[in-house]
Amino acid sequence: MRVKYGAARRRSKNRLFKRAKGFRGGRGKLLRTVKETIIRADAYATRDRRVRKRDFRKLWITRISAAVKMRDLRYSEFIHGLKLANVTLDRKSLSQMAIQDPAAFDAVCDLVKQTLTK
Image (cartoon, rainbow, N blue to C red; front, top):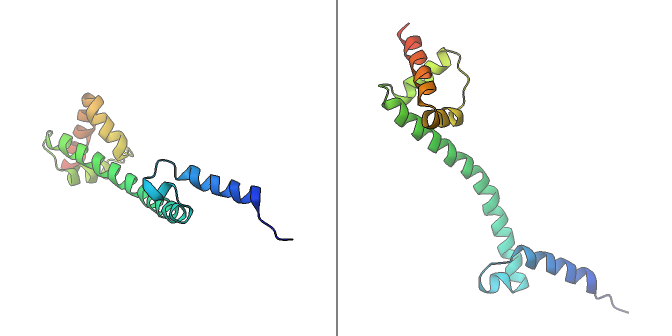
């Protein structure tokens, strides 16, 4: 008597097709193509989790750079001054501060200027 894997095979196919929901054409309907597409999609997802972090860091740096330029400093000088002044704010919080609390950002910039002139 041969084994047909009925319920188990259906369950595994359903699992794959559920993950491929919304894919166009054969990529969401044909088993072999679905398997290939899911492997590729997982690879992109893994890669792009890293890329998202990179993109946000770039955005924060751009925002800080613009805010610092308005206060007569360069980004590199600003970061160097923060290190010398032992200020441990990260780029995300500095970017938020520059947008939402300009007075506090002014205070940080003043501190950096004082530290750099010493």
